[in-house]
Image (cartoon, rainbow, N blue to C red; front, side):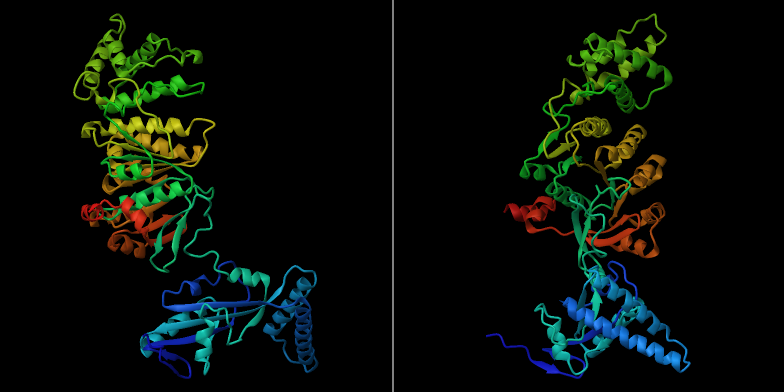
Length: 568
């Protein structure tokens, strides 16, 4: 049988089974307050209980009290004037406030309430208790709040801060509606004022223990892009999966480019669409024309220039001219011209382009260049790299969740594969009439950034995604590659939300300089535990720990030991 707690009462504190507790009463408030002015007290980083007791004052009683208050203040002012004393500035301000409040109560613009705020501080020893009280008084003084101990009433004070709704101290004061509204903890350091219906919980605030909630799609941000940077093993993929899982809860359509099949289990459990790029059932034809748009053919030709440049390692002016002519010839042979009525015809494939290059008219200036370019493209149509382009499209990017796996692509083809899937996703999000919030996550994005052509395409996607209600998430551990080039730094700069987990020592200087971190923030990203991160978005800063429910954790973890235990 559990014994009841043994409580000893002292003049200013009580001792409950070795735990000391002292209650402080808020006796003085700042003259002018703004929304969330009491946040520093409500998020004090110690073990405290804060209670706010609010009791409405009936209108007639409020009016009578205000009349008596004004009479006392004006009487004191007249007495001072009669005796030739200097006026008291505080009394003059109180008289003016009482008159203004009486007028607003009379016309119904505000109401009066009895407000009592109590703070009970807990500690193990008397020394710790005194230290915590000193910290609390200093914090209260910084926001112009006066605190007084509940002397000889420690038991009543402790009861008044329990979740019972009982005010046994009864040491309140009268305030109006605006002051009550500004005090209420409906907004604070843990919650962003920009949070909307697509907001997600990122984790637990490391300083206050509250929740860090963030909405990347809110109009108050410059864009919906995010970048997640960390060293290997810091928990970046776990965080990225937690974000996309909770984005699905909020109705966001999610697409993931997965280099290692890490998201396969998530797609399977959530009924997502899984595409294995490079296999026969995971093929995308770059010659497919998008639905609608007067410039669809022109845009497709320009993308094919970008794609071929990435495939062969760059193009000179002569090769660009020869390629442009061959692409138009390839479409024309399938009956596709600049007339939109011809765009429903079956599109060509890469092998058709190589044939057009080989059979280019020898009388033209670019014939030799075209044949040379055909030889460079041959491995992608008849050789070892044909898996990506050996036929028409066999997949559709549909559903609430699409995971595109690059696992089956050789390393030399991953940049080309990334371009293919990003182009297909861009066509999806930019199609008129299909507006909805979308999230595109690229895990290990350094694969695309290391190629100049791929980095330029990614930069253009990052700049234009916001126009179509889409956000790009770039997850990478190779911070050096990201920040070493102008395009990489531009991609990072175009991410309104920046999430920094633990960084490798050799990357600290570059990260701090690029993201304008303070000395304290530098220490955070240098020593953060696994799963802890700094979220930076303009003036918003929050340090959080990624948290997940047991059900979510089973979907997110890739730890082999944990997976073996769960499967067993």
